[in-house]
Length: 391
Image 1: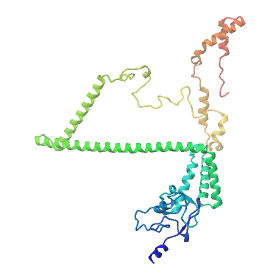
Image 2: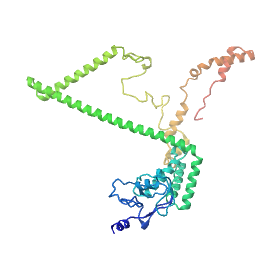
Image 3: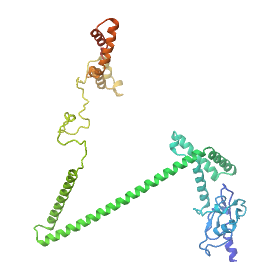
Image 4: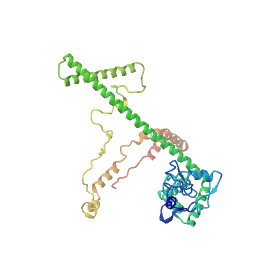
């Protein structure tokens, strides 16, 4: 009676073949058994070391003893009723999840992602990357939740893509491994830096406590000797004396390093005046623009000018309301009129004097003219004429 009662509580699970959606009898979810093996009916209560395993070919659970006893002699048909898939012992493993539907979905997604392993940097636009992700998700959904025809079609598409892009898949796998190694190294560096920082903070705290205790002992000794002042005043004097000693030791240490031959070539000597510092005045506040000013130096910009063409722009709201500024027109017109007047063409073209003389000599030889006449003709022909902006 007890045996029949135990057998009555065993849920018989019916699975579809590889790629199918496992479906439980009576609407129950397909889960790894907690107590009884569905094949040998052994109880985990009497066998605490019993472990349930599955094979990704059909996801039928059974205990490890059944796997060894049934498949140790070679490939054999799955012992679950209605399952005709041939299984091998090396294909069995312990499931990660109790829900076998989740286990199956995770396995399918791993297999698909191992083939469709491209990253966003491989695509020209974000739209192409999103379309690629959508196609992969549609294919994955058909493998997980599709019917027999959809699963078969998805398997064919997956196999065709893997065969066509085998080299790219292997290359992306290599890049992924390198990126994963780099990520692990970066994480390890962060952990190591954090550990060293904690050690440094701990050592600093210990040194501070030791120094504080040492100062306290010195204060007590000073009070015992009968020094003048309160405990706070004595402590302040001790701290000041220690700071002075540290500063003196640091100064002598750096001086000894310099005297011992530690030198850096090319450094400016403090207090010495250099040619590039003649125009610099360090007495005033710091100027990030280096003395550059935007105010015009060759003309004075007035608020208004007598220009009839701008009367409508001054008084008509159709011009003023949209934001047209007469003052901006004045500033731009004067800037364009005076732009370039401070440029010396002769200084910038000093290097072209040799070429100009050669051209003059050639012209003199051809036209029986003197070199001086040719030079004057070349200079007069290259004279620049300036048009009036307001003309």
